[in-house]
Image 1 (cartoon, rainbow, N blue to C red):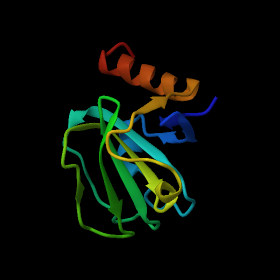
Image 2: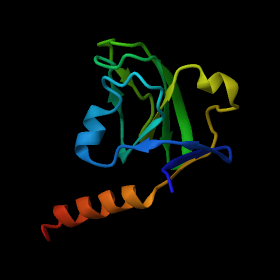
Image 3: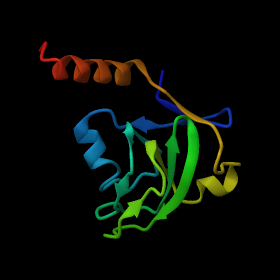
Image 4: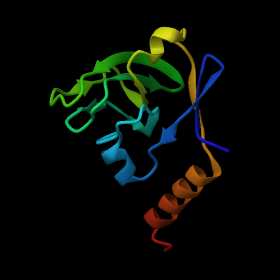
Length: 131
């Protein structure tokens, strides 16, 4: 099983950034078009594209609903900030969204693979000091 992001009942394979290291590294230095998801606690998000070589469409979501969509420019130091609280950001290679009916207000969810669930479980155990 692979990680998936589901938007309007369409499933897209995605790499979920589970660990803090994965969250901070993201798609830096990645030349292969990849969809990446960044789940987190609800807050205002800010991204930049300093070491990201491909243009991206960033979907910001909160409570399972898309609240903002913005574009990222390769190697830019400009911050891409959510205009709304969000608990999930999904980065798509720019242009993919032109081929699928994705818009503000659409429903979005993540489906975790066993590997990602294990990472989340390990992080939870470590935070509790059991390891």
